[in-house]
Length: 408
Ligand SMILES: Nc1ncnc2c1ncn2[C@@H]1O[C@H](COP(=O)(O)OP(=O)(O)O)[C@@H](O)[C@H]1O
Ligand SMILES: [Mg+2]
Image (tube, rainbow, N blue to C red; front, side, top):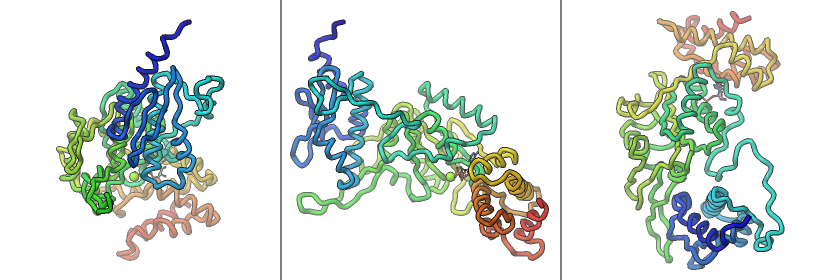
């Protein structure tokens, strides 16, 4: 079978690589030049080769490969740029059907790089987080499973989904979003909204930099921008109601049909890449200090609202046993206690203000193992003090202690 002439294919490949939206999104095009069979990037006035294409093969340039090896010694920002560059070139080249060859073999075609041993979760550039191992064994209620299956189908078909997850603290909101990314093999990026006082700061900030020996103020882009501009990324705005609604509302253009947002200080709009899925997590309710009530305009932007809740005792017991190795009988006592506390908290006239989270239960299970399975001792060192001792014998704390006696 005769291939098309290598020149033509090569030229097309080069052009596609060079013009790829992805490359443009992660690296400003002005830093890249195309010349002959190579793409180069400019740094400190010097051209450094990124990639060389010949026929249907490509190689990453040796200078950069070397840099990658020595990357421990490079500044983090530079290391990131190189990693992104490599990742994107590899992905684009693969999509074009180009084969990677090591530099020394480039040209003779004698050998090809061995494919790396397949990892269960793909390796994304380092600013994406790897879902925690807990995300893999997430326990879904039937209803949640159905909802997630629908969402997965829609987003795989290219629908834009902005999913609100609400529920009491420690019931697996963040882990649910991680689980979703894990299941669909998507790059995951989590913004901890509580760490910001203005959503615009997600995108970047003005910072001092040195230019030609002088201090200048420069816009420094944050990784959030790369995340929303990465195709099929799962972007989680975690604990979004720790931000004031005014700031959250500034994000509307990201969520709706516009899919692009202009940020003061940034020279270009931020464009949401195709297939990006947003998850927004919130604790709704008055028990959460330092949070805001979501406003209706915001809720209106959400395409879907999922609610996490406490696992039923049977599921929670299985989770505890699997996760911690606590013997079943003890796991049963512990999860019974949890159910009891939650029930007391859910009453019309509650004896206890707050239920107990799965997070606390898992922690208590670990302490039980450490404390030779003594439930009360473990509870005393984990969550007991979260319950007020005000009111003596009828206090929240006394009620919890009674509940411990009740589960035997
Ligand atoms: N349904 C679940 N299946 C598996 N683990 C869960 C589940 N719900 C909560 N967890 C565990 O409880 C802890 C808290 O979950 P997290 O997602 O941080 O809660 P939230 O974001 O709602 O505060 C994590 O260790 C998580 O793995
Ligand atoms: Mg969370």
